[in-house]
Length: 128
Image (cartoon, rainbow, N blue to C red; front, side, top):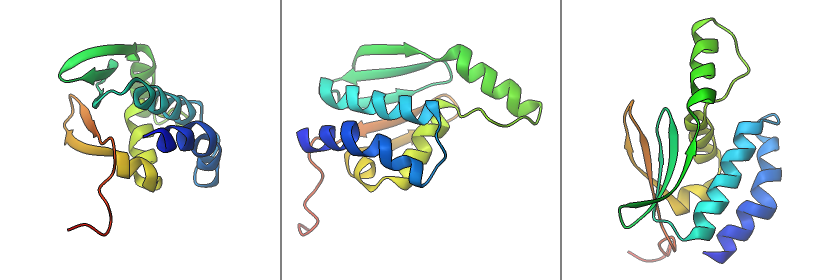
């Protein structure tokens, strides 16, 4: 996974600007992806109030995002733009970044949470 960690830390956070204008939340989400990979977690969960890093079902790290997410929802309700939620940021990264898709598998997406399983080594493309 070290090559993926290096990719996220050194390349991905710069390359995303080619497919999306500079966005602090996207950059922060890439930084969180790097931390989760560095820590060896097996699950990343994004809820409306927290980002949770878990290993074998035990939450090992949390980040409180409630204020930010609430502000984004209020802005959306008012028809204002310019606010990316963390869940939307991860979705954008997942859509546009093949390396992230190889290492993060979306296993559940409900209004309560988006849950990604972290794959240590992506499957060999030539294997059946």
